[in-house]
View (tube, protein in one colour):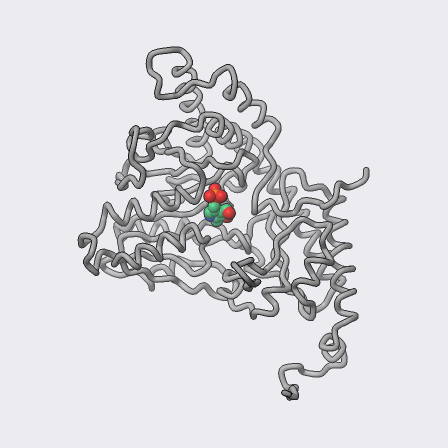
Length: 412
Ligand SMILES: Cc1ncc(COP(=O)(O)O)c(C=O)c1O
């Protein structure tokens, strides 16, 4: 069967909606369109029942109780609510003063964690940004070294969105528990792909987003622990008092139904999917590395999600690389800022040089990625890189065994 081009290998950015999810959502646009806050008629009751069902489906995937799940607009909002909500509730000094409390995070977190932390820093909180080692994995030891007597929150992602690397969440959680510090994890890339149990994994707050697990965009959830300890949050958004006052605003029922259904499907299928995707990813990486020298797979080789692969290609130029693989929808190691291309701060954060960061690709597989697509991707990448290297004098010198770091370049 002919492949539909470009093939989609950017599932870490977003996933297509599962048709079963769309089917579950449809009646809530038209027949059952009620507001879950309408207590006086069956339209409202149907919406409330739908939200309750979805809450149960999310809770089951996380191993928590229904009451511990808050619906949000996605992981960005969940992260903001968790981080600022804890900071304002547990602060040690009022606004306007310094010494309000200490927060531990990491330099390669998603912006939806980094920016709230930086905001709090400006407001008088102290923040330690752990610099991860070259394999990208944050360990409990690193968190322990960063903690202080006045630490109120540790926020470390479960799995990194660019590298797919998996942090020592359970051990970090245990450390936080021991010290009486609240532990939040941005599990956007992890949940629905890998087994999660907030009890066993010692997590107090967890962010997730439906559109990364074959659900709709614009809806997510925040898990908030209610026992041992009962985590309190200051609401960031005020209004109608929905979600027990933590998140006012009319429920996005269609989205919530979609999130619930996506969680139910993930619960049933993630183990099988993960095994299949791990094989495909291995094939992809082995296929590329067997045919090309001077490439590196970024991040820890074992502690990595089954579906994300981030590869740097030496001796090619970033924009040329993206052109060469235009039939693969994937991400590059460059981020578009207002005027220029910046190398990915995540790759820089694990010590990858600017040049190599620009000539990197993140290929992320999904539920419907086929072996034929992986074969096509291998061929495209290998041919593309080879073609670019034919034009590279540096690659020629490298092939001749010249140590490029020792070359004295003439400056004009
Ligand atoms: C790790 C991580 N955190 C947060 C987000 C933001 O999620 P959302 O799009 O639901 O706001 C993303 C998605 O890009 C992500 O990968």
